[in-house]
Length: 479
Image (cartoon, helix red, strand yellow):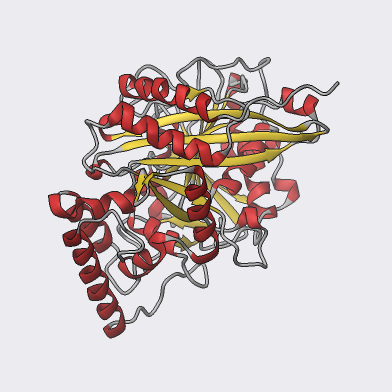
């Protein structure tokens, strides 16, 4: 424990060690009979996600496409494309089945994902202008998965409440907010319990906003289905480049657009984020050594493509024994997490054991967060910042220049430990004779005291010079 958490106060380290021993003893005395009904075994990250509420697990993508919402035909086109993707991507991702619905309190077993009653259909719910919902079950046959066939099913579906649908045994997997009842992807997603994907189109800009349950899918799956949906929707014209704010003025969880220099690598981006956090939010943080959480793709299982494996989480402290963290140390921590599981693997695998009640680890984390001597533990596990990157590869510079923007954001730091920021980067790149060319589509969101436009703007202002300072100089032009 001293090696893995060198900055911990001895009291915090001993308390964490005692907690791990207690949970390990409980696990030995009362082994779990069943982890999940949908996957063979849960990864450590899935165990953690299963204890978090749906509102915390939401990831979003935003694409300024200029979708044509006239007549509501976009909803049928979206559902047809989602159903095809759901059918054709089965078995591709590690522990990411989509023939599930997501339970909250009334779950069976530790895993919040529950198997659907009929794997041959996809259950979707669409908001109606009258205030109710239309629930449809889409057979996964080619003839039934055209926009026209889906539109016909929607036209025949009665308007009902979600309680009535549940009494009929219908558990929504996908929610389409055609009536724009939610003001954002976050609020639309939570209109229906059970859904792992939500969709809405901003009525003013025509931007497509999608929301995902992180327990059901990771970033690669999210990106894959987002691009698939975008290709199927009707457009009213060329999408417009959004301004600084990607969400409306009344959005309770605003998203801020960030510009990054092309020659900034990921290790230096992590260091720049921690430096900016110290400059822009030092008085807001509850700990004296902020930590950064970084998702990485592991080396196993070898039978699954790396991009489709479930992520692990690396923990990068702002300071180590030698001083401020360096890019080389960041690279070492990421590699160790990729190979061995990282700092949190041992702690999480015991603390988030299926032998324990699913609500206990979250309660423990909050208890540590509100105890001054133990706050370091909760901060390390929940982080004060998160940096996530998704990479898309295109063929040439022309494709790079015309690639449409794809913005995303994921889970934010826990407010109980002081909140923080989530910086999410979509990297589009191509190889050229003179080197790799890149474009970044970057968003910034916050939680706790950082969840305000003023704080996010201040953080972006602090990040800009740090990122510029750490970017590699441009290569000399070839003669």
